[in-house]
Image 1 (tube, helix red, strand yellow):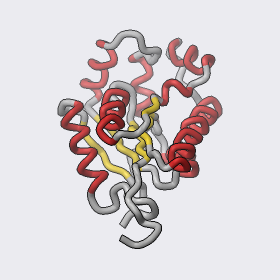
Image 2 (cartoon, rainbow, N blue to C red; image 1 turned 90 degrees about the vertical axis):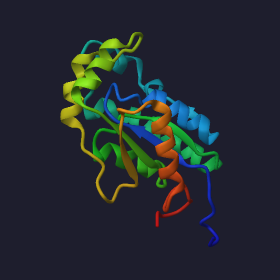
Image 3 (tube, helix red, strand yellow; image 1 turned 120 degrees about the horizontal axis):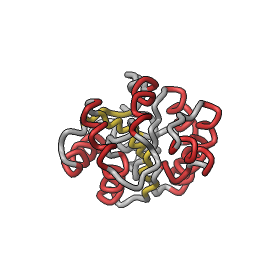
Amino acid sequence: MAPGNERRAPCVVVMGVAGTGKSTVGRLLAERLGVPFADGDDFHRPDSIARMAAGIPLDDGRRRPWLEAVGRWLRERDAAGTGGVVTCSALKRRYRDVLREAGPDAFFLHLTGSRELLAERIGGRTGHFMPGSLLGSQLAALEPLQPDERGAVLDVGPAPGVLVDAALDLLSGPGGFTHGSPD
């Protein structure tokens, strides 16, 4: 392996709309990789959580400080060489650009599913601030990963363990978690 291209622990952003299982898959993936985990929801300001809980989607101005906080976490993990897995909806390309600016080597794992499945999952969970009424606005805002974005899309139909196995295969393949540009 060429100098400067040694294998390192990856920085992974598990992204997608509400109900895709980002936190479940992210925690399992971090555990399997042996890297730190952070839930992007924990980076939201209290006033933003209150707005979302009231069914009010965040605008870009309110979302920016949250994205910057998630980005700082990525930058710190990358600088320390520990890698890490963080969840973040990262719905729009420009949001992912903020995260990539902080963690240029980040791999985006986009979890996706049918509107019906996601609505069912959101309706069945307890203790989360995100109401099902915001699913439509998230789906409308979602911009899929573009070919020039380092990442992959996984459908959330299979069990979380199956998704983590698929993610590990993607991360260990060509252009997986090496430091530097993907091949």
